Each structure stands twice: as C-alpha cells, then as structure tokens.
Image 1 (cartoon, rainbow, N blue to C red):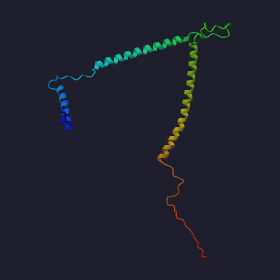
Image 2 (cartoon, helix red, strand yellow):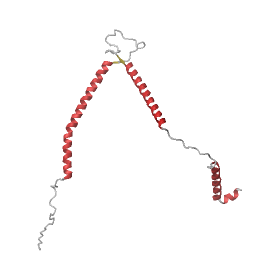
Image 3 (cartoon, rainbow, N blue to C red):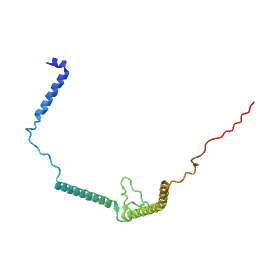
Image 4 (cartoon, rainbow, N blue to C red):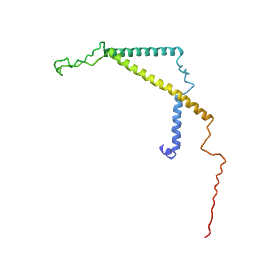
Amino acid sequence: MLLPSARSPGRLVLVVFLLAAGAISADVEPAQKPHSRQPRGLGFFHKITHLGSLLYQQYNDTTYTLKNVYDLLSNEFTDTFTTTTPDPRTSPTTPDPSTSTTPKYRISRAELGRILNRNYRGLQKLFRLEWNDAWNQTKYNIDDYKRELKNSAFPPRNKTAGPINVNLSVEVKADVKKP
C-alpha cells in the first residue's frame, strides 16, 4: 500500500490535505451550531462604577501613604532644641564599648525649620537672579530679532562685490626683440 504513494509524493500530500480538511469541516457545521451573541462592551453604569472604585482605591492608597510618611517623620524628630547625642566634655569616664549604646542622632523640628527656611531663601534669591537676567536679556533678544527680520526682508547691499558689468579683459604688451 505504501508502494504507490512512494511513486507520487504529490498524491500523498493531496490525500493528507483532503483528510485534514474533512476533519476540520466535520467539527464545524454552521447549520447545527446555535447562534451565540457577541459579548457586549461595558455599559455606561458599569464604567461609572469602575471609575468610582478606581477613585476609591486611589484615595485609600494616598491616605495610607501619607499616614506612613507622617508617622515616619514624627518618629524621626525631637521636640526640643537639644539632640540625644551625649556631649563628650561632660562624661567623666570612658564608657565600656561592649555595654554602651550611643543613641541615634535626632534633629529637632526647630532645627529642621531653620534648615528649610535657609534653603527656601536661597531658592528665592536664585529665582530673583534668574528672573532679572532673563528680563535684561529680553531687551537684547528683541533688538536682535528686529534686526534679523529687517535684514531678511531688506537685505543690505553686498559691499565686497563690484559692479556687475566689470571688464575682466587683460591687455598684454609684448615686444619681441630680434636677435
């Protein structure tokens, strides 16, 4: 039985193709299949409820994050001007390194306020300098723009080129002496 197919491989491919096509068409018969409705997209009210749930989740995430940041910041500052680091001049004896623990340096809220205020004043000064520089440069930029616009509309004459009808012929006087 394999002998005839070995003589013509094209027939074998055709038979396999027809068998495969028949198997596929046997599975799908549109006359016997019931009509199924295509799923609809999201309705208007479903979209509104979905948007509401997204906003609610965003609100919860934001409040949770702000609470964590506030807790972190409130635990890092002291409410006094002093820090918890000991003064080395006041301790009369040297503590044992195995038993002593140095407390973590904590900045006071007032000290943080002074640092932030100094940074804010520096940023204000930088902004004023940049603003004044930009304001002064505006005058020069407008003058340059007007000059370039005038030169593009009415270009100046080229002073390096001579008149158009210049005689470029050269006279050569050659006297030939006879020997």
